[in-house]
Length: 308
Image (cartoon, rainbow, N blue to C red; front, side, top):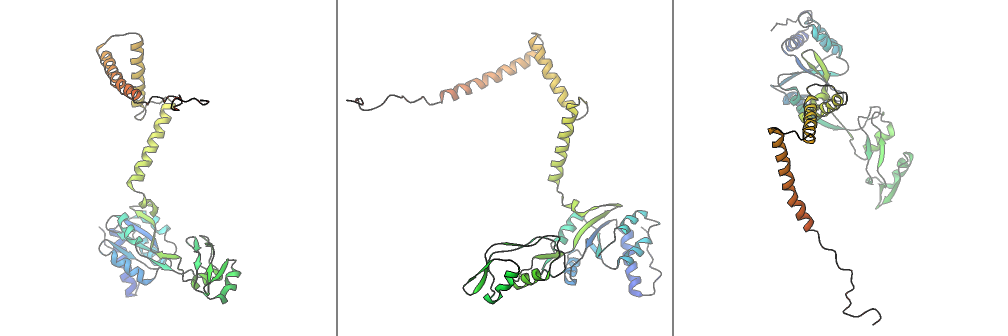
């Protein structure tokens, strides 16, 4: 464990910041890189409190973080990968416990937010049908947005669900005004974990959401496909060999039976097969006996013919 000494700055706060970040970088190799766009100071404080004792959250200018991390490159050159991805409004979360659990804790802190003009919509926005609580004098506003309405009990009512904003589009003034009038806060923001730095390896944080079940199903599917390819190409390997041996054994036994070859192992297999057939026979007989007899097609007309 190396000791980091902050130098090169006369500002005590900056020296303290460099000292803390340098020690974290030196002593921790599990880091979450998180986007903090549209996240308020209160949310950040709640996240820090929830992570107390299991992780440290470090925020600051990217230039300052890069400058600090560069000082340890001589001892840890792999941190150059971390420097390369420090872009945008981000923070570093140094993890002392399982990274997956820490990411789950962070994802619990989200706050609803209004749709402001000019922001990029992170999701699709729909306006539900029903009463709006707005007076009939504002009908022209809905007409300008091509939203069908009617007046019910002195208030405007939207007739159908409206697909208002598509994910990835900029929110315009009319859309923002409508959602504000309807008191709809369609978006939610929080600290978004985007990337994981794991002892020199960098991968998307979405990988942490993959559970053991999904991994098992994926591996099973891959093994099944590789086995099929090996069998079709007549390749003998760990996957195909059990199936090849099983097929060879069945064919050998079939050939031995056809040639009436006698041996102890073959006789045991014949007896076992015969016992299986005998055990299945009574079940077949019972199912046949259980079938109802067809009803007689003769007319039951109390002894009188049609013309009697």
